[in-house]
Amino acid sequence: MSVDDYLAGLAGPLREIGEKLTPIIATALPRATGAMWHGHPVWGLGDRPGQRPVCLIKAYGSYVTFGLWRGQEIADPSGRLVPGARSMAAVKLRDLADVDPALFTGWLRAAADLEEA
Image 1 (spheres, rainbow, N blue to C red):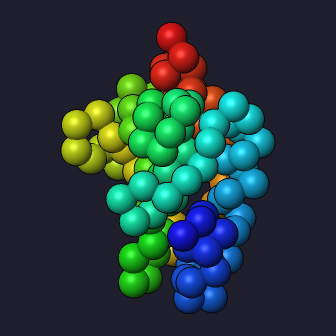
Image 2: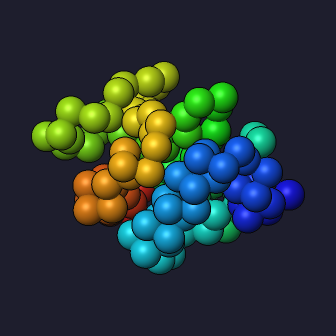
């Protein structure tokens, strides 16, 4: 299964959120590779899926999680990133209006900088 297959299999509103996120990720992380890893799309800077992961998209029943592996290390004046396991942080996206391209681009570039340091 590819990232596109994953998105195509989502219910309408969730698919729309995923389809709005993927070009933001691609633009912010031009050297990253997106692939399916553990059942959902993950973008990383390594040669294979899951190697040096930066971010993920994972759909649930009524929202899409947009997560950053080292999200707790990223400055987030918006307060939208919620800490998770280890150093991860994520935001739950319930509709298209929750997707903030400028904010998410900043997070993604900061996350990539942490991985490349």
